[in-house]
Image (tube, rainbow, N blue to C red; front, side, top):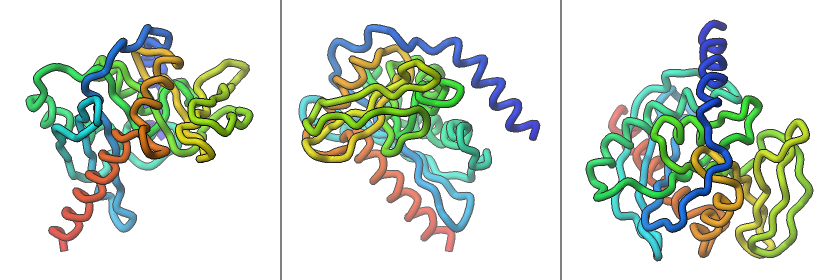
Amino acid sequence: MRQVEDAEALQAELCRLVQADAPGPDSVTTAIGCDVAYDTDSDLVAGAVVVLAAPGWEVIASATAVGRAAFPYIPGLLSFRELPPLLEAWETVLPQLAAPPELLVCDGHGIAHPRRFGLACHLGVTLNLPTVGVAKTQFVGEHSPPGPRRGDRTAIILDGEPVGAALRTRDGVREVYVSVGHRTNLDSACRWVLELCPRYRLPETTRAADQLSRRALAEARTASR
């Protein structure tokens, strides 16, 4: 399929721009979360971008974009499906910000990806922001179980190289899968993911974006009936 070949070629090209061993932000006053909700009965998708402010991580700005999926669901090429609604929502939320956010958190993978270029990398390179991928499930590689305490982590190994971490964000709760997207490193990524998980397994950025995208999708489905 030509569409797939072109997408994989673009990943290979853009992958060279990823900064996966950068210092990362020293401080984060605002963090952005993004997520996309899918209608199981159609090609309708809803992207959500939320801005949260430290130290309590309250939502201070948000935007959604609803449309039709422009790319088929193909594992490893998810960013081509999710990027359009997320960028549209980003363009709406950007004018609401006094300054660029210090961190972008994606519900997905960064370099923990077959071609080292997941959604967090694609968004990070496109927006040129420090970006981290936090996924609920493992996509590639192998890892041993992290210890049971908050902050315990083990490396995700792919082709003999570490590409991310299985990170315990709550005592005794199943780990999440963290990988660098752009302009940060794994230590910094894990540090800020833990900061964004004061009460729950998933970062507050992910939780807020997930809820907003689901609401936007439900409203769009209702309106289309």
